[in-house]
Image 1 (spheres, rainbow, N blue to C red):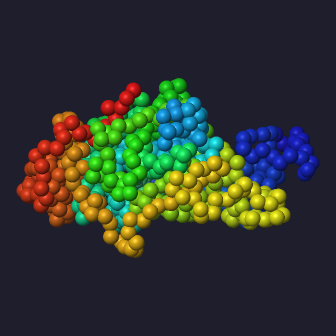
Image 2 (image 1 turned 180 degrees about the horizontal axis):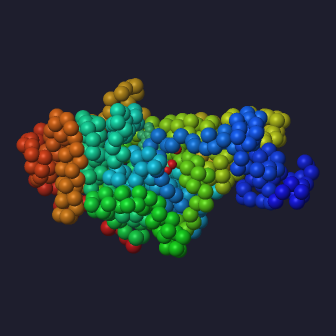
Image 3 (image 1 turned 60 degrees about the vertical axis):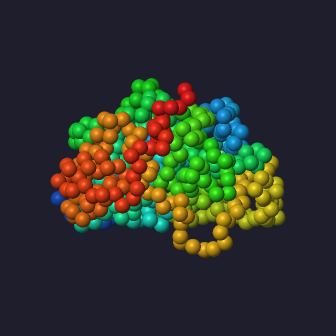
Length: 548
Ligand code: HEM
């Protein structure tokens, strides 16, 4: 409509404009100035040149120039959905967390991702998948930032920049996007042999999920639960898809990557839109919180190890249903900020050195990615619980705080807001009567400062072997073919030979197959390799033995 049909909507004192819908009778500038024309620049004469005076042109283009924010340094490509978690109460004996009490219903937001590709990369590459869940609990946000593979490449967060530099595309040509088909990746995993177990999972069908709806999820680290009585338990978290765990074949994955790089995000969104809401059972493996944190000889602080379900069955403690697609990818899927340090009373971390480093990394990276320290105010990150944090100002502050005394304690803003601060007196076994988060005091096994790690972290091959030997013959064939294919892309023969030496320490038949495919001799193992597992019944977490 032209200026003569324009009717002003109100005086300056009217309620602020609602900028959310981006609809209305008239287009305006960001300042609310009605515009007549947004298709032509202001020029000196019909044939130009364009005038710097055109404030609308400058505002429109300047805003556009700054539309992109940095993609995540890892897990850049993702798809997400909203959902609901319902607890069955089975965890209540172990944790006082309100969202795990019988019948508790909690809103969730889940973001699935690949790890290494950039934002525009294909969905079906051979890679680990992220499975990050935000629980908007009544006691604050709880984030479970997990993956679809139950172990990790490294035992200590200080190596994270190294494994990611090795896994990301080569620094010279920025290829390949896929994780495993290149020298730097195999160089790293054959030198840091703790990575061999995760690598074995990456060579399996687990690294080619059929759908995000058909993936297991794992918290990987061991966490500590604290119950109403203050008794602590160690746990590992599991998500099990009700649709079962399914993979693509390598040929399917490659074809789909070309034909429909959005395969997984389309599948998730279409299923939810059609009302086929994906569901996961949430489970815990429970271990006693002993001084040595070993369970059947497995070091619970070593994130390259699983605990077989035969030794610690998974107890189902609730179910999550994803039933709503995001309506704005940027505002929700892109701006969501997960952090393993977002905890609630009743759930605490352990001293796993990988987890400890993560506790620093996520907040740090998000300050860069989301432009300052106030991203908890973004709608997707806002807790659904009361906030009284005394944080102030900073880049992108949108709250107009009204208190005059943002410090504690104070006698100006109604005094001390906390009924009783827990100050250092909390002991292991302390109760949490005031509903606050209490850090569980830890006994240090040694009183030395050291970069050394326990000897129990030194076994790098036995669980890779256990995983391989637990697979069916066709699954084993896929693993063998994957190693042969990916190692066949490596240029430096010394790297391939070093990786073959690792395989020799895992399983002779696997090593022999891959070596033959590559036209290389199969090396002899340097460690003792048993012909069969001590317990043939022992299988890895495959999810097929859960109680229904
Ligand atoms: C992002 C999982 C280890 C640093 C993510 C995401 C997941 C994840 C799922 C994507 C979250 C999203 O969708 O927004 C894991 C798991 C790990 C692990 C399961 C090991 C068990 C680490 C370590 C570090 C690290 C050791 C660093 C020391 C990051 C960073 C991001 C990220 C910087 C990007 C976060 C953002 O930009 O919001 N991780 N990660 N991760 N991870 Fe990890």
